[in-house]
Length: 415
Ligand code: TRP
Ligand code: SF4
Image 1 (cartoon, rainbow, N blue to C red):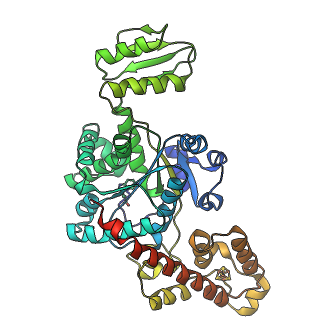
Image 2 (image 1 turned 90 degrees about the vertical axis):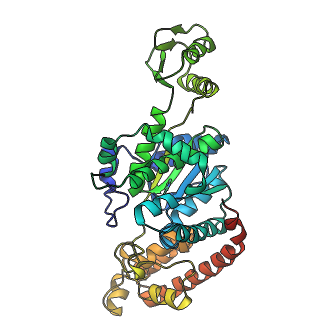
Image 3 (image 1 turned 135 degrees about the horizontal axis):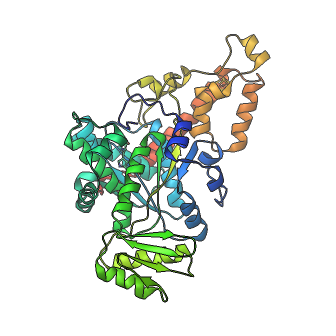
C-alpha cells in the first residue's frame, strides 16, 4: 500500500485479515462514553487501542498525536481526524499535532513559504475545534529531527520497499520523510515521557504505524516476554549495568548471559519496572504506538473525496455561493421521480448528503435517525433534505470561521 498514492482504494477486510488491524467493537465497549465516530461506524479498526481505553478509564497518562501534510488548504476531508484528536484530548490525552512540511516539500514539492501558509490554516482549524496541546512544524523541530535520524538507523531499504513499495526511483528525501513521520509518532514520548500514544488515522496511513511499531521495538534495550511459568527479560543492546539493574530490581530473579528470568510477578509489572530501568540507563523505553482507523467520507459528487476534484468537497473558507452550489448538486440516494421517491423512499446509505450529516453535520443521534427515517419512508424529498443540510453546513462553517479567526494568534505562535 502506498499512502502517497492519489488513487486510494483501501480494502478494509484485507487490512484486517492480512495486516492484523482489529475491528474496533470490543475495545470500544470499554469506553465510558463512546464518541459519535465510534457509534456511527466511522472508526472501524485499531491496533492496541485497549491500552488507551484503559488510560481513559483510569485517568492515567496517554498521548494523542496526528500529522497533517500542508500540500493545500484544509477541507471537509480533514475534519474527521481533527475531531478524533480533539476528542482524545478532551478525554485526558496529551495532544500533539505535527505539520508535515518536510513531507509536503519532499513528496509534493511544495515551497517552504506555502507549507507555512497552509500549515497555519490547519492549526487554526484545530484550535478552533478545541485542540489544546503541542503543535510544531517538522522542519523547525530539532529534537524531532534527531529522533527521526535515530529511527532511520533501524530501517533499511528492503523494509521501505516492502512497506511502501519504494523502488530505485524513490528519492532519499521521500525516504527521509517516512523516517520523519516515525519520529512524529514517537515524539510525544521523548517530549513528555514514555506513555501509550494513540494515532488516529485513515486506513491508508497504516504503513506508517506498522513501521513505527517496528522501530519503537528495535529502539528498546530489552524485550519482556511472558514464558508461561516465568518472565524473560532479554537484552537486545542494553549496557551490562542495565541488565544487572534488572536482576537487582526483582528479588529471586536469575541472571544469565543475555537475559534475566523472573518468576511470580505479573507481566505488566515487570514490563513497567524494566522500562524505568531502561530510561534510567539512557534508553527510550518506548511504548509501541496504538492507532485507530477511520473510513473515508466519499466525495459530494459520489466519487472519491480529493482536493484534485473540487466538487467533491469544500474548504473551510470557501465562498457561500460555491458551498451552496456543491451541496445542492451533491449525489443523493433519491429516486428518479417524485412518485417513486414517495413510494419507495430514498437510499441513505448510498447518499452523500446523508453521509455528510452522518460524518459531520448532525451531532445528535436522534436527529440523524429521524433524517434516516424520513428519507426511507419517502416522507422527505431530496430537495428539501439538501436545503436543510445546506443550512446546517452554513451554520457550521460560520461558527468554525469565527473560531478560526479567533485562533489566529495561537497558530502564529507555533514554532
Ligand atoms: N503522512 C501524513 C499525511 O499524508 C501526515 C503525517 C505526518 C502524519 N506525520 C504524521 C499522520 C504522524 C499521522 C501521524 O497526511
Ligand atoms: Fe439523501 Fe436526503 Fe434524498 Fe435521503 S432524502 S436520499 S438522505 S438527499
